[in-house]
Image 1 (spheres, rainbow, N blue to C red):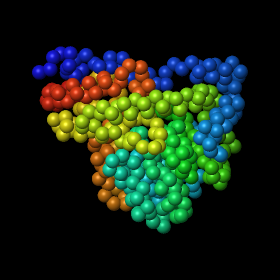
Image 2 (cartoon, protein in one colour):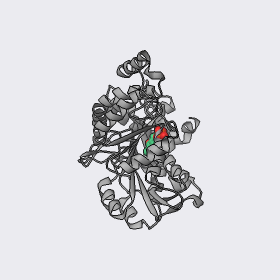
Image 3 (cartoon, protein in one colour):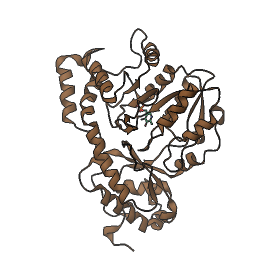
Image 4 (cartoon, rainbow, N blue to C red):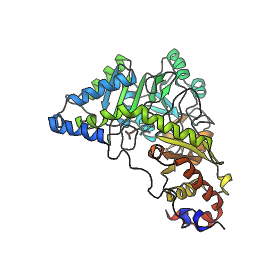
Amino acid sequence: MTDSFDRPAILGGEPLFPQGSPDWPGAWDEVARSVQRSLSDGSWGKYCGPNHERLESRLCEFFQVEHVILCASGTAAVELALRGAKVGSGDQVLLAGYDFKANFQNILTVGATPILSDVQTADCQLDVSQIMAGASDKSRAVIASHLHGGLVDLPRLMAWAESRGLTVIEDACQCPGAMLAGRRAGTIGDVGVLSFGGSKLLSAGRGGAVLTNRPEIAQRIRLHTQRGNEAYPLSELQAAALLPQLDCLDDFNQQRLHTVNELRDQLPRGLSLLASKNDDTPAFYKVGLLYDPAEFSGLSRDAFSNALRAEGIAIDAGFRALHLIHSRRRFETLGPLPHSERADTEMLVLHHPVLRASGDFTTRFVAAVERIRLTASEIHSSGASRRC
Ligand SMILES: *Cc1c(COP(=O)(O)O)cnc(C)c1O
């Protein structure tokens, strides 16, 4: 028996993070001032005002990219990227078997067929070698999503895709500001996408953007969004809220990376980080962790994450693998998808706000994991985790 001080919160102990996860984006002075200016100068009520324009040029500058098209969401941005790449009926689009569900659905929306590739064993990112070996004459585009702090090998994918005439759509919704091979993630592919959704690192509650250096792609997207008026708009107020956030992004990403590196050094057994320590600079919207139930007396991944949530830690299961949640008639695969399936059952994602919180996150996180490990059988048989 452990003493009551060490009992996991799910079994009645004191939670290690009694305040829970910090609010995000929460009250933010610079954002409030920027929005207040827009309210005061009347731009808030315009179709097209200075904030929208300013945000576009500020994003061009920050990402070092020629064209930015602001839009209503990251999901809309992926659809626009597909349309900009002229993907349509009869085409095939390659993507990972473990990816954001809306990316799969967007391929169907433009009339094309999703072709699923597996992800890599260690970091669960798109397996570029399998894409290169499996593409066919019908393949028109690849969606490459950087997920949970990992980075897809975009330079390698691009070199190959260019020689084959395929368009690469780089989904940087989870890593705005990340650096990959000396460039910002989202600008290495032919067309990149960002999300400004309510939980994301740059947030306006909703919103998104398409980035590209290819004038013909930008032109096709603008034609599609302009139907006498904007069909996928981002408002002046959203743009006003986003502008000051870009000034903080690199600093905040640095702070988040610092915490993740600390966590890596003290990572409890049974958890492994997707993000590797390498020359690139990742960004963390979610921190992906693979969970091994064998190290926790067989406690299931979902019972484990319930127990961590009871401690006040914002952690959840990752995505479902796409082939497990869609009818076989909707997609094809390049082969078996064992690593996507493993990600489906073993992935945990830690939400980013806690990475910038004051106080020693890593020590308390490790303490939470260890008290759960010690009582894993009890948690399992109590059924406590199922009540959440
Ligand atoms: C959040 C997200 C999107 C789309 O975002 P929305 O703005 O919520 O539509 C796309 N891809 C990935 C990988 C995401 O995490």
